[in-house]
Length: 270
Ligand code: ADP
Figure 1 (cartoon, rainbow, N blue to C red):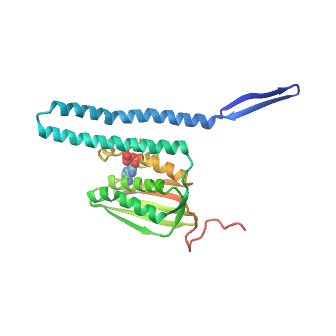
Figure 2 (figure 1 turned 120 degrees about the vertical axis):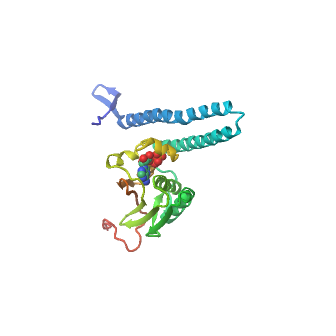
Figure 3 (figure 1 turned 60 degrees about the horizontal axis):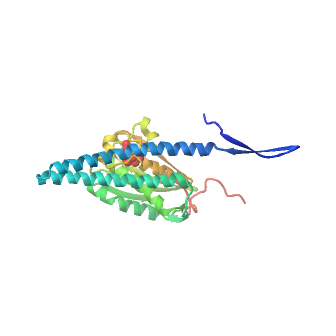
């Protein structure tokens, strides 16, 4: 249960008046706790790749006269450095979202452009696994928001769909106007997520299978970034999944203008 935390100060005392000022510190304390947790988690997460890098560097040094071993271990160092760099990038992105809360650059954004750009960026990973990405649904829908953040959100969902699916499967992106909302659904035929994990996957650094996530270069921050981006746009993200069959992640955002031919969910007031 959350308790209200008030800081009360005596602001003015006169013979017949006492003026007290009360400030609500509840939100400030909550943010402080989130930040403290985050720092603890981040330090823990950074230790793994840094530790691996220093161990690998030592191994390379010891194997200096074995070119094949040097080649192999420096390849692993590059992969580890890449993971570290992705992690740092996502930590910065997430802490910016956590601190700023509201959006800075709000403009009218074309959902089609967001989806096309996200699909384009996920293409390399999809091609490497012979996964075909198809886009379908309503076109010409706009939302108010930050174009780059929205691309990041859809791309994170696509990257996951590819990472947690077997080779040769299909990934779909469906765009659908529903009154004053637009739904962007990313559908995969991958490993799926058990019911007990479905809520938790949006938490920072939560992974269903840490070893698998590490193999795919995951940081455990992708979905938590998606959740923040959705909330900052006045929307949300949810998951529907069947283990062994696949998952559907749906990003729901308020539209800037309802698409022609769709009914707004509430009639406009005169
Ligand atoms: P990660 O970097 O580990 O992918 P995310 O925050 O993006 O971190 O996702 C958290 C966890 O949720 C993943 O580790 C994975 O276990 C699970 N997950 C996310 N997307 C999918 C998906 N499309 N199919 C199956 N599991 C998924």
